[in-house]
Length: 323
Length: 235
Image (cartoon, rainbow over all chains, first blue to last red; front, side, top):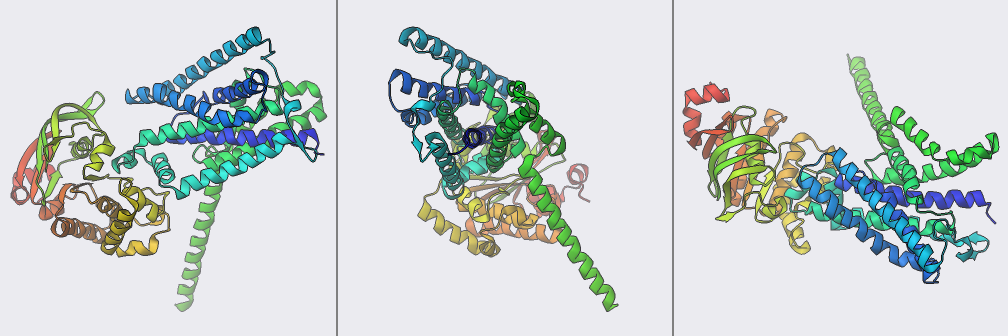
């Protein structure tokens, strides 16, 4: 049987990776950080709540529902908030503030829903945990297996979509240069809309699995956004592959780092857990603002330059020996 | 044929073009020259629907395309090669060509790719390499190949020889002539190298401060010492 902290670290990293991929992907296509991304995860949490507590079904049934529900909400945010503002040439600040407003509206709606459910269905809906409703396989919690399988298959699916399908290549083209993409006949607005649908769906999946291992509340989505944002920045906002690395690293650092600190200085440090992603983001922004992927590219470029200059030196050496 | 009539256009509240009239006739090279900041690139972008149009009309073969969506204008058969970033550097050459033929059916696209690769044979060996590894001239050729995949009726070039070595620039001009003569395309060419552009052009427009200062045969503008000296640096 795995120690609980190992399960926590792996499950949290899997889910954070899915959220970070979505956050970065939405940013790359629409060039707007979607601060309502955490709210989509919160919707996923409450879909699972509804499936378990109201409908009395297996929590994994929620997985079938969250992708279309959260995807549609995310696409609606793009269509009704981002697109009209972009048409009016709104700047990055206005667009970011608009997504914060969308997040507040969803957050309020979730609170209303939670209170309504408590009053109408008599269910305690503001703090819940569904570990008991999860299955176990050879002592390993089901959510660990499912979240790992989902994280791996989603990464493979996303990579295949982006590199092998025409729409995926069009998405990468739009990310690199949306002006050029549109002059080639690519409907870049449709690309952004579909991307936001996918990213919302991914956030919903991550959110729906959260209550199976972590205590969840209406605030969970808002709080997790700090980690998602930091993971995306650490990975480098220019690449979803960076977000994968950043998400996983941040997830492991946050959970294992908190446990280590609790061992070292005491359990009073636990509520300060959100400081870990913020400090990581702070260090990355100071030392390598382009993120881990950018840093890797920089090192690769340096190596190429070094090998080229080495070739020149060799050639010069040969030249002088001829003389 | 592209007809621009009394076009007032710019970016947001900043107006760049004032009552510009131009006509680009089929199978001819129409050259647009002028000093820096005269609105040459803005004119091409306006035709592509990428600027703010205050008044005036843009017609393509009689259809009004004023401020139409870029992807719709592209579908109608107008290809635009921007001054910079004319290819997707993070995509491979093959992926760039697939994107160029985004609106074309798969089988048809493969046939067109072969035709284009016959015109630009060096691309065959570079199909799976990322476009950022190509030289400036090679990228310009890839951009042309991408335009041709769409079998456009009009190709608009925005300073295709900027930052290229003279020998490579010469090759680009030769290709542009080839597009007119072999593929019967309508060419709109914005170029800083006014002398060379007017030499290969049929019709010419001189833009000065967003207004049309000359319209007529390219050879006449080339021979006009006053305008040439004042605005184009021609001796």
